Length: 389
Image (cartoon, rainbow, N blue to C red; front, side, top):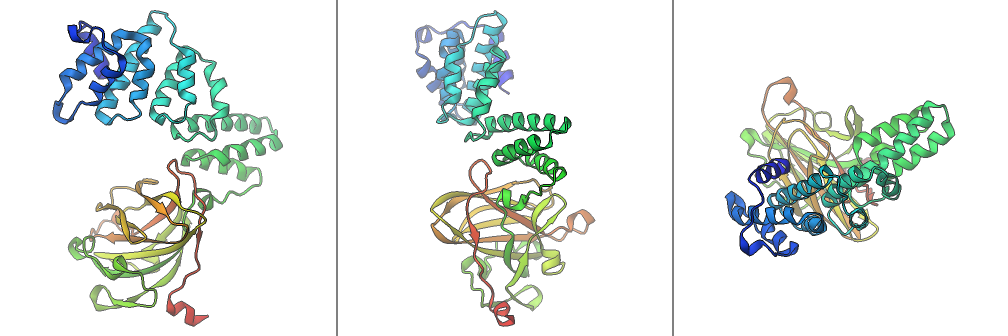
């Protein structure tokens, strides 16, 4: 998209209206940030874009900084401006402002996408920049650069492993694992560590909740269950029973997550509650947080899902059997210090195809870049389970 904008605008030349001839980069960026939906402000944005590109490298940092607060539409314009400026300078064999770009990248207050864009152009202009920057980015707060830093360490470990330097490889893989956040990288690291005799607790590494209390099925014939507000959405009473689907009486029961195929901590309602269609079920976990902290409740499911934190709905998606994507559903909130309640509602539809029979979910608690946050699941039990003890 940004390349399309850049080439289209460059193709019509850089003749500027007189009132933009001496404009400052900051004001030009502001005009681009003001672009609206359905083409609103496009004319001003196009003129400002041309003016920015004409300013050349002196405008790069202001454009990159503008990405910190730009909405997606404006961000496309600004990224295209960075590309056009940098492409033109490198094509003319003129230097980019290396020191300023590097300082911008090191400043973690800037948006991760902006820092990543600056990094890509810096490395093109100065290939040695990666050697200077990546070793210090293993704990970077932006996934955009942290991944490259982890990949660099993984590559070193892979080379050590290939040379049969097992002790060195073990330490290097452990270093990479501590900073790894992306599933593919972590899975590779865990696989290599297993070959070296070390098992990685992947559910714990990612922060999955592995013990739940579940209740159901409730009726969702014709999809009614997703909008219906059944008792667990109002209040969790572990001693209560309720009328469920078909008039059955349903109560809370314990369920332990399983690591199955691509799932690290799956609750399979087909196993826990037996198989139903046109049904809704709930899962509940009380977690204790050592401090007040922001949290992302990240779920994966092939069903319609609602997520609740301390009685407040933080995410919903009414979609069935469109594929399961890791962390495909994210609700954001804040954990209180001490006890917190998490409720997951999962609705199954009535499709008959074999591939539409899955009914379950997995949920983990993470920070903004996917790292597990500190918490523990409290050992709460429904009355029926307490009586068995």
